[in-house]
Length: 490
Image (tube, rainbow, N blue to C red; front, top):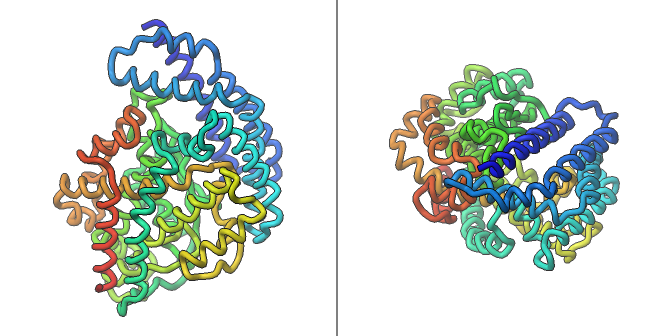
């Protein structure tokens, strides 16, 4: 056991330093002064250099060879450390530091270009990011598929082919549902009006508590692009406010609470070990999406939310709770992924998946990306992109090099559909509880059956263990068809 104990002690320090690096990223997106961008890039590169040196330390190979796992937990710890070590040793330290530096600076470049709707100002930086990630992918792939090598960072066990097969099965039914609801005679009324920023943030904080967020181990701030950061006893979230669209703030907050509660719900014995974080971004997204959609956008919970908003903001201009539920779930081919309804959301992801796969594989050049985006969006959504911040510049992911990340959003929806089906079987009175703003039993089920295990099992095994069946897209598609056919009176 000496080798195993030594390895975990070493790993604990590495995990702690990674948390510090993550905190620098949180600071950059929330409160860092704009003039510090270049310096922060150097700081992030320096941290990545230290982390890369630790992750490639030759002693790790020796400890792994000598360690003798005595139980499932030890086997999982060693599996994850071995995967991290093998990945790190394939990537030169120089490249790891350069990626950290460039993507840190690129984030500021993207934010400025987005604010000015200036694609030309962003493309040189994006070209640099793509070049570096292609180089990294080549080092990781060892002659295999470049895009698969990057997907593995976010969803181990998945490949472009397996993801593409799922998307191919989903797309026809999603398109058919979209066409049916868009052509329906009954069209829910949209929420209109002005909703003050301070009042929205007060509501957001209350809803975060309703969904189990522990403010003694987290905080809620504003960011250009909402995100969750951290784990263990420090899991922070951000949201954004649009004073004409309170749903943006409300559901961004609930979404990020789902991410944070996953991290906060992991067994505390796993703190600062490889098991102490979410097992994959797809599983992570399953938590944020089930919190946001199957729970937060349900008819039961929106009835509770309707009363809350009426008390805080006065007459909402909607007839009743049913009309409010329709407004929350209104289907519209909007430009923005994070604001997309559940019918269109996965189509946004499928488009990004195809474009970024072509970028990494070299089938699409960066200078042609905007044209490709706009053409695909018009074909898939029937609307022409009106400005870059509604198109290519809307997401931060490519600026910070997160190629392979986007498909995990749709996988998370698939996993959430499976979890929702099992949750309803386990909690027969779920709607009655949500109608009262009571989420405790549902959240306890998710914590007990999924969140507490952290990285103990692989992604699909994590979902299979929680649900009792092989994850597949049928529960999600069935849920969407039943929900929106009811709302649109089809």
